[in-house]
Image (cartoon, rainbow, N blue to C red; front, side, top):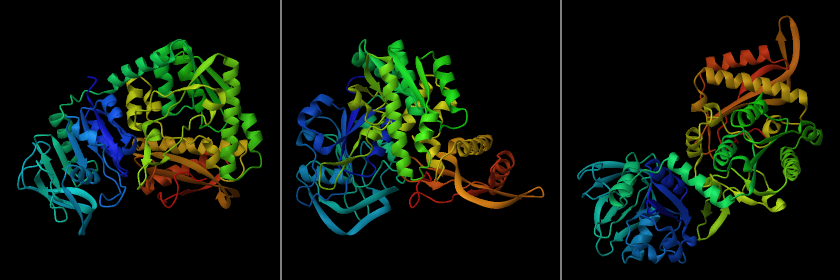
Length: 518
């Protein structure tokens, strides 16, 4: 990969800006998203992009003090693509005009291809009617000098425009969403054919680059990594071990609230298979002691989080001489969202893996995955040779089973839930459904009901099953199981797990519900 073979996405606050990055990366081109208010002439020169994409956004260029692209973007001499708001600010900044319109377009729309251009080449043809996804009230009505209209829609007389000489292109629709069927191909035409990107960015290339970066950052220093058994921390651990060997020590804190046999699997893989130095601290008694009698879910989270930090710090001090803390921070965790009026609003998620440890222990952070999305982390895991069962593992909450037992927590309840959860996941895998589901788990409800087993009366707990489909966990739909699957699974749980005599299935989407049950 050449040093210039990357693309800059300037974010104006669209809810789907990350999808632009996804589409670009899927075509083998590395890209980054930078908030518009953080992009300067110097940062542009330092990043040295092969092309620039201007995202959509909720603002109107007709309002006062709304976002604009740095003027230097248009003087770089590289191709620029404007999307939705990005089109409008490009037009406004280059001498054209945008106006508000009573004919707004939201959702599916049709674009008539009136002329050919480089981003349509081989995909859209003159005279064709193509489906796109629109989301706009304003529209371009006067083009800047050098531009021509190449596509129109009912609500956008300049739905697609082109300046072939300067390699500036702009569209009113969103090519990044799946509702624009050929959108990914249009973006690839821009990055590959117009900008000349090679499309050779792969996980193998990223692996090499990440290892080199880690070695340069760490030198001969010691690194400690909090290992949870999830995909992110597992990939970080294996990558770091490949980069710096025994300079890395992993700490696995067993809270007593893991899934069935999970602690043994983690220890076996990392200590025995990879020979990674690993401290395994079984702190079950400590955690359960502090949680005794606690039923409020937020209080549970705080107790578990605080106790984890205490235990982790204790083990790190025992190791001694550590200068760096490794975390599995991902790209969505570090991209700032952008407000209507410019400027970052809130960080999507703070560094979350080990709470406030970096500050508390005066450690520098090592975050080799911060440029990746979740599915890219899984690809890197495969590239590093991690077992498929680790790579494909469903997300698991930091507090573990504690938030899948509403009410107080006991050893007995944890044991019952582990067995039910293991049966449920086993049935999902046997049915070939595991990879179709974002997250699936069992919940032990604080409800007892009367049942009949044999000729005897039972009075036992209700188990709820949950399974959702999602792309990012922000929204989710319940998984539509075949009723025979649910019947078979419920029968196994009731017959094989003492303490459960009734099973129900949760058909709540997010929103209005949450994925977890706390």
